[in-house]
Length: 453
Image (tube, rainbow, N blue to C red):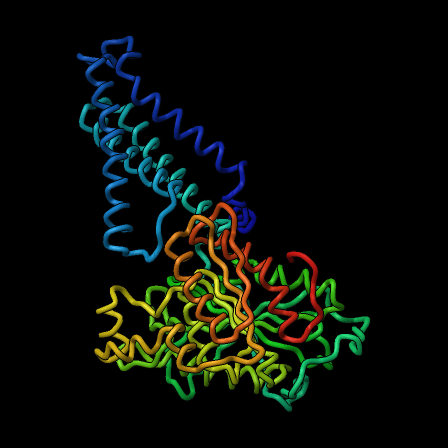
């Protein structure tokens, strides 16, 4: 029963509307309660003044909330994203609810105090749910409290029983005949990819195998390396981004064929941001992804070795990493899908980023930006980058358009996907994945797919 309760969606009207209605009713009742009291016990000495004070508390609280969002988000940029008007509204309402609680606690009346606590809690809950919907993150309570829901699995080395080594090219789809006992859907599980060379302290990676890869004699398939945003974890692309669901749709239409996906941990912890570079202070994140993870994939999974069969995707910090790796290592990756990429690796201010990740060298920091990497490399051959961002995400629109201009200048094939009505959030991620994956998959050597997934 508890498991079923944890699975209740928190983004649907069945939850949102009742919470919003209760929050509104309790708030309105608290505001007008002074003029409704009929007995000496509930009557306020100056009811109109009490109502005005409560209305003023709501206004002042909302104003404080808006100022807090502006200062922490716009001025200090503590969160690395521009908050949408919807999120700002919900945060302002949460502050207003708390301000009303404070006033009612001071004005007195035990019944009103109890109701005020419930009202404030409900308003804060409604605001949290509203912000969650705006960011498109948690779908249910279980997802909010579970760090990685996927079971851990041991994957044998190539050459071991049931394992197939890497070969040069992707299977010809026209020659593939799915066995009758092939599973209907893909499998998502966790694995431990050791930092053998990097010694990077990474969390468990998440792997998605298409139905064809789950057969006793799997075909040689392309592979996509998927990177979460920051804060984040490897499971995010599957739990929140629905990556496995989109690929299941593709596999269902193509006899179980689809790219294998590996989502390693380029962060080390939710609050860490090693910027996908090697540094003394933040660890060797780049080596972990490009040496330890790439080697593990080739040694354990039935993937093609040619760069034409390798792609990389990411969101936000993960998209910046995807751009860094795909541009710096065209001998590994021929395809990239960058959702809301930053113009350069960043951990706090530019000065802090230089100090933390580049040993204080501003020139090394500038050289690590994807634009600088592309310019230094020169012409790329048969390289595709699909860019995406949210329609309401002005900062990342600018960085994406700048990166795309450089990519086209150095000969990359590019396309741009704009998610309507979303910003720097997971609604954007899902939209761009659904519309951008078909082009990436086709470039990796599997059949093209019409329309979105």
